[in-house]
Amino acid sequence: MLKIRTVCGNGIGSSLMAANHVKNICAALNIKADVASIDFANAEGEKADLYVTIKDLAKQFTDQSKVAVIRSYVNKKQIEEDISEKLQQLAGV
Image (cartoon, rainbow, N blue to C red):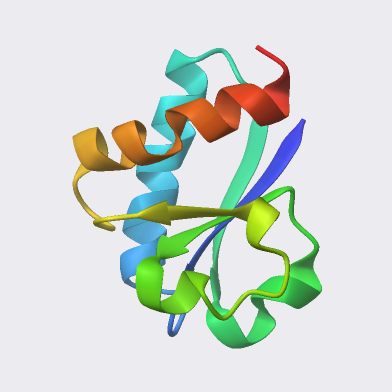
């Protein structure tokens, strides 16, 4: 099971909406994942397989291989386009 964290500044607004979309995308791809939202300050301490966030926050992560950059927190189609390939790689699908 993949551990995925969606990240925004406070971890309660934008990233919560993105987390719901990521859960649905994972389900559609038959990828088992523990998906939750988190604030940026605590994100890297959470030790996830993948962090999903916008470009401005993504460049602040130390391990870029674990980051998927999304264009929008709310547009499911764009999120799916942005993360599907990385999800499948991580899941070995």
